[in-house]
Length: 405
Image (cartoon, rainbow, N blue to C red; front, side):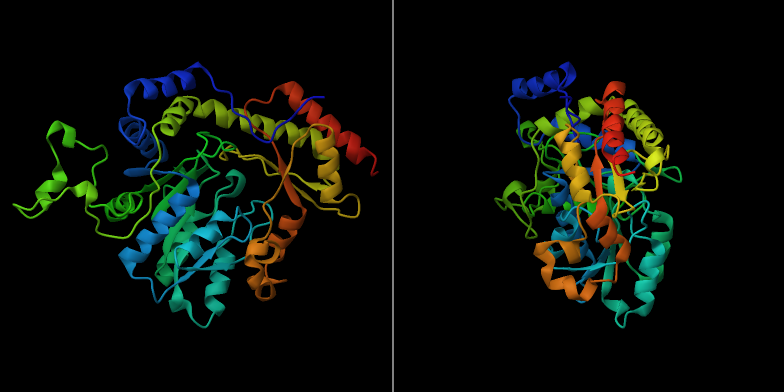
């Protein structure tokens, strides 16, 4: 039986050489390879700065903590974000000592809308307690970042764009994550650029970049991209009092985390970056082919919007006619025929046990997110799928859904 995976990674000769070069260098902790990736990712996204972290979740926590330090958010703890996304966004907000507030999504792009944000802020009794907008570019679809920024300026809010699943998605000529106060990315194994576990932060703000660099390294004083003490040069020492025996690497200004990465992940990511145009193009082609093959079932399934500006993480579907077939039954039968599936994350405040305490407050208030969370799922569209794989996937859908007619 053919196996159609949600995600896949083929380690080619370039990736193997990149990893072996790291091993041969004798330096496996953060160093020159990480610095090179940060430089190239900033160039690709179109920002002044980039900083790697150990994961996308670590990137979220780092930026949120930096915002708290820089903007004194103790009395403004509320963060508006998406209820339909991987749980790391809500977790990062809570773990940073802030409070997630959820607004509804666009049912076609799965992103929170400017209208939902504006509507919420205009009705609450305490808008002064809000400090951050954290929109999520789900499955690759971009939020309307220009309109979200307009609302942020109106209410004096910061914007952190979660572009973890949108490597290379374009919105009005800019990459997702480039036009906010900061953007974050994940290079998890199932994403478009795959490094296993690694995250990144992008920003044009030097203060945010500098503090994030300190926070991800346990709050240390040292700010160098690559340590130069072995060469007898240490810019950090120039900022310390004369005649004092300090080492900037072991002097800490703030309480931080150990969110550093290793050289292996950036090395793999750098090798894959050479193929970004092909990765995006091939995924778009697979989305178009699947849409064409499944268009006869548009009365049962909500097919994804095809957009040449979107760098797709996967192929999302929402069951429109639940009387024809349930998500559980369709996913089960697809899996039995070798087509791997994943649920569309679930609506965090009403469908995630970890946030059970929010259920009563949100039940029925975010209907699009609840519906997609209960009836949405996705399959693979990655660049390693062949035309035969796509044809097989379509044939299995036709076999299963044809029986519902």
